Length: 390
Image (cartoon, rainbow, N blue to C red; front, side, top):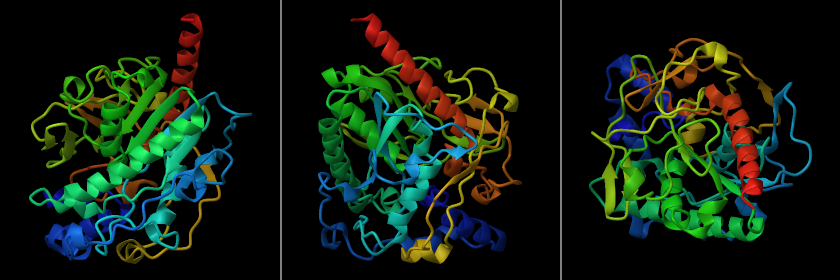
């Protein structure tokens, strides 16, 4: 179970690689630094963010953030967009100090959110206005605490912030269509948010699509928690869900990934997974050649392992995005996993040091421009269908 944590952050990947080379049980070494010493009940949760205060929004239309950036050489959107994105960021808090991020601006976890927005959420700014809340994310150890109640409690607290942020988002966007997008811990929460607030409700009519990436989504989600929202089948489908989790050709599927169900948390082990190929946007389907990949995007996280473990800012800011890397990799769905070319060389090598070829860190990065183009396509198709149905 502990091995689940090893690649959610670049710093974690570095620990895994060093310990693997030395023959040390890396999960034991790493656990020493990230397991909270106090139980959840005695861990300071911090004040609940007030989502009427834009300080607690990492991205908000008109607010300067990396979500507004465009890759060098690419055209930016002109004027306001008719569709909005609610983006839930992945884990950036791995400190053992508390079970939930206290949301202090002068920290590495806060700093990393903006870098993540540049690498992931900015893919949606061509079609849409981007909203991304800061939330009291559960620390990384919460996903490993499967035998106790502290990890689930921390995840529950994080989700309560997401719910309130989504309510504030809906109040702000005044009935406009929207996309929900997420990665990793963000996808854990987004799946529940869809189930409890969108699926089978009038709000579902406003859902353009859900890009729920990087969290090994079991197919039994559809019918159990999502009874009215289905997986997308093609590039232009709307009101549906896309998902992939990225591995090299020899990659080994993770175990122990927890998922929320109304009856309680279950792990995904042994379950069939949803895989959408982000080059063809088909479920499963044939391998798509690298020549069809319009561009990957490499964004350096900056900082060091010490910054991450101690939650000390590295004083880095993402002021621009580099050019796209065209035709970077092919992609193929294989029994629920997205297979790609090995990333042992090149700019993404730092995210591929795990011997299991788990490329979780770069789920969005390898297909950045494809996501950008597809979100625009689905948004336009949704708008066309809405007009024709009036």
